[in-house]
Image 1 (cartoon, rainbow, N blue to C red):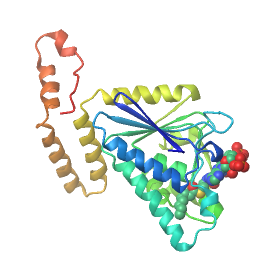
Image 2: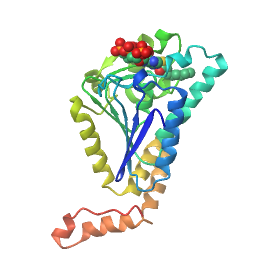
Image 3: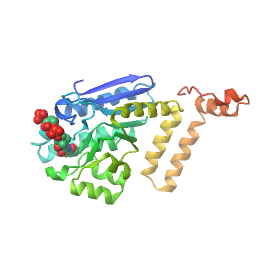
Image 4: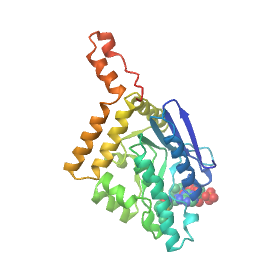
Length: 270
Ligand code: CO8
């Protein structure tokens, strides 16, 4: 792969978008490579959490850009049909990230503009470096956000703030992104990846089938009416009682020996 690296460290996969010549902008090849990486992640049952981040720019600055958008050069000559097809290509990949069985933490290390902000919003949890910049600059380029921005931004930060950001094409800094709920936390640049890995490790230590069921319950429930949503939860809750992890987790809690009771359960993913 030319523009993406996938490193697997135990239960954690780190997917890095690395297109230094274009500040990690998403061209078709990069979208295809992300898609192929998702297939690899899905086929590896040992992976419990994914971290998505951006590689350094061509000067080696690791905190210049997460993803500076979709590739403007590639988009500049598209026809209406090609534009729609390119939008679908990005949307299909981002929807796969959103519905990947395991949680995805996005570690945003610099610019997250246009398609960069959009791919971040398809992840479960977003954290960023203190120099990160977010925005949907599309209307300044004569287009709409086309990789889910008109839909996900309103769901993440609320309709009013999303409309302000999208209509004005104004970029916002990390502190404002935190204030409006676009990111969960802001870290000094060098602390971003350690923080992402620490959070990933905490999640990975929990019962993996239960974590996956939580992701599915939250995602599917958000798209349903409450009466249906709670049934989605009931079914997934019930399914956990067929797992060894549930027996180990509850058995451990009920253990009379206080030392064993406090012991961390090595969940088996079964
Ligand atoms: N596409 C292609 N190349 C890019 C992009 C991009 N999005 N962003 C940066 N680059 C390239 C630059 O052209 C430059 O290349 P070169 O060195 O060959 O001249 C290199 O990366 C470095 O960039 P700059 O010299 O511009 O770096 P600066 O530090 O001066 O500026 C910025 C950094 C502010 C991030 C600036 O590069 C910029 O404004 N980039 C564009 C940001 C943008 O508008 N992104 C949104 C694009 S639109 C989009 O994402 C729509 C998504 C939905 C698509 C749906 C399709 C139907």
